[in-house]
Image 1 (cartoon, rainbow, N blue to C red):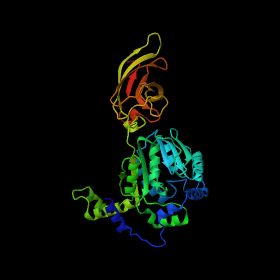
Image 2 (cartoon, rainbow, N blue to C red; image 1 turned 90 degrees about the vertical axis):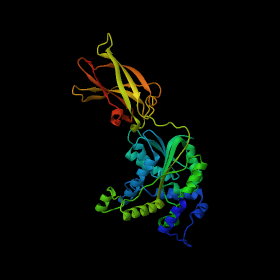
Image 3 (cartoon, rainbow, N blue to C red; image 1 turned 30 degrees about the vertical axis):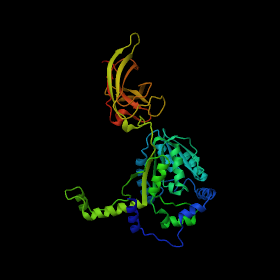
Image 4 (cartoon, rainbow, N blue to C red; image 1 turned 180 degrees about the horizontal axis):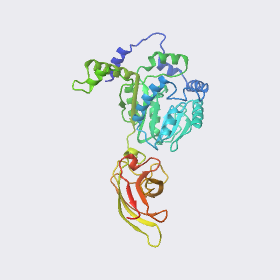
Length: 417
């Protein structure tokens, strides 16, 4: 398959070998660590928080189209989730780190350029991070990441891996900090990136590495680092414009017109040479899917019994049977993101919400596995005399109410029952 792709690439982008061409392998051998760091730092030292670098992915229209398209691929490859510990490798000004923090992740952004991280800190202070997420930035020396072994759930790398000197050694280091069951996700250029006019110009003008990303080399380095072989995410990176009558045929009995199919295949081959999105998994036991993932939340809540508590006005004892019918293990650690509680909402007579967070009850003092059933007895104090209605629904804290996730029917109970 790799030989076929190389042949296609050679037809679409013929190699031009000449004395003016920079050989990226020779450049890597020539450039020292200090030279690379100083060149990167000098570049970012000349930028401010109003620069386009800080305003990615919406720095300008052309970049926004390109970056957001690739960003959606990267997020899908990374399979990030709320509460995940994420390493943003080669974070530069931190725009992706901030976006991941806004998604509820705890993010560490690393880069070799201290000036870039100063911009990242300044931009973070100016813009802030949404409640629930967290971000910090650390300098990377190009050899050992400033993180402990098995300390992150995900590693993301957006268009930065082709700048490293030693791809195999870097993958080994990324694998070190990745937890078992975790993923390294990347969006990177193609196998002939160093030969493009833009790459040649940047290597000539700046002390920067614009290396090729050859997937056979990545696969070999991944296996040597204890990772699984790459899984590729393939799609057209630019939409194909077709006439309306052709589009109507695509879903009709005639199917895809022959000419459109040929254009589609040619376009796909070309884009495979331009941009490659992939992820590498670390084998071993993983934490699995837990209640930090809203899409995996599901439950059945049954009220078994309810009665007043003798001698205390307005105090009721209710007994529930709760079954985990989803795919997530319910976190039981108090205060942790995704900690599952039974939430009680105070309702008005028309069943509109009066108090969304009237009371919370811990479901279990141990994790609740999918398929498990928990018996829960709670005491509920009504706010005063008269008739009250209460709605019970499970909630994964700082993640989602189960009913909002669409896979749990709330239970409404009235004090007159």
